[in-house]
Image (cartoon, rainbow, N blue to C red; front, side, top):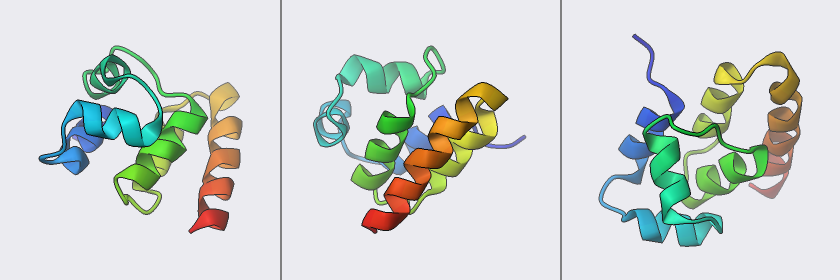
Length: 87
């Protein structure tokens, strides 16, 4: 079974606290926890911010795009392009 966005986020977070990741991504720790546990779907901006914060090199963006429905994937693609231009 393929790894979900939440599972990958938890794995990539490693020993960092929810609070640390939330501060780096400019969101709340409860939001990060909800993402890890599949209770919420990430916004394109948060996906890009968390990907950068965890130095995931686009891996989280790609996972979020693969999980998003057709109406959401366009926003994620724009965020991915913005992420790549900043790298």
